[in-house]
Image 1 (cartoon, rainbow over the protein chains, first blue to last red):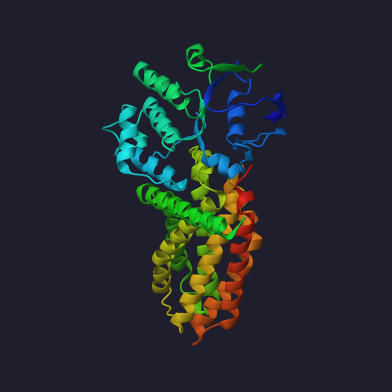
Image 2 (cartoon, rainbow over the protein chains, first blue to last red):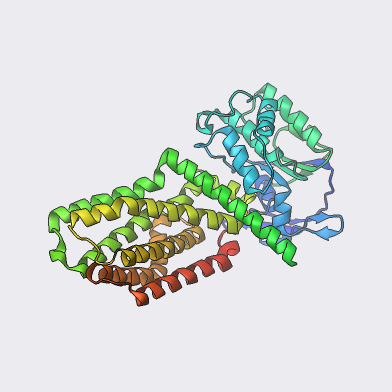
Length: 200
Length: 230
C-alpha cells in the first residue's frame, strides 16, 4: 500500500497510509470507531476505490490484477451479508461456484461442522441467529483456502465456543495466508503477530 | 492475454454467470419478489382496462400499443428488483466480491429475461382472451415478442446495474432506461400491430428489434466491468 487515502462524505477517513505486508502472517488493525478500519479492509478487498494511493498485491514478483487478487481473498465483515432465502450449504455452494471453485457438499458440511453448525446445513439462513450467521460467514471466507484473509470484527455476535473456534481458525490460516483482523477487541488483536493502529 | 487464458476466463465467467442465474431463480421461486411486481401489475392493468374500455374497437394499433405499454411498465417495475434486493439486503458487496462483473451482469440478465418471459406467458394469453383478438400471423407475433423481450430485458438490466447503489433507484431506472427502450418498444408495437392485422412476417420491425437488442447487449459487454465497480 502506498500513500493510501480515503475520503467519504467529505470527511477524510485516513490518509498517507503506506506499508508492505507479507504472507504468511497476521496483523491486527485497531483504532477507535470511525478511524477507518472497515474502510481500509474494503479498500484492500477491492470493494472501495481509494481517493489517492495504490494497493498492489504481488505473488512472487508478479503484480496481480484486481480480479486475480480478489479470487484469492476471504472476507468477513458486518457489511457483507449472505442470502437469507438460501440454506447455509446453498450459500457456500453458490459462493464457491461463483468463484469458479470445485465444491462438494461433504466439504461444505465439514466446514459447518467445524463451526458448530453441522446439523443446520439445510436450514435457511433467515432462521439463523446473528452468531450463527457469523459462523457461516467464516465458512464462506475460509472455504476457498484464500491467501489473503480479511476479518472485520470477526468475533462479533459469537459466543465463547465460537470465539475459541475463531481463534483457532485465525492461527491456522496465518500459517499459509496473510490474515488481517480489524478489531476493537484487545483479545482478538492478541491473536495476531503485529498491530497497525489507526488514529481517529 | 493469450487465447488460452482468454478462453479459460470466458468459461469461468460463463460458469459464474450460471451460478448467479441459478441462485436468483432459487431465491425468486422461494420469495417471488420480482415476479409478483411484474405479473400482478400487468394482470391488474389488463383487467381494469378491458373492463373499463373494452376491446379498443378491434383496432390493432391500439391493442399493440396497449400490450407493450403494459409489458414495458411491468418490466420497469419488476426487473430492477433483482439488483435492488441485493443492495437492500447487503448481499451486493458479497456478490461483487465473489463473481466477476461480467458474470453478475450476464446472470442477472438471464434472470430478468426469464422473469419477463414468465410474465408474458401469463399476460399475453390473458390479453388475447380479454380483448378477443387473435394474431393473423402467429410466427411474426411470437418473433416480435421474443426479440423485444430480449432487448427490453437487456436494456433494463444494464441500466439497473449502473444504478444499483443509487438512491431513488426505481424512478431513476425507468427514466434512464427510456432512451434505450423507446426504439425497442416502438418497433415492438409496429411489429405486433402488423402481426395482429396482416399475415406474413414483419422484416423491418424484426430487423430493428434484432439490431436494438444487439446494440444493448454489446453495450453491456463493453460496460459490464465498469458498471458494477464503484
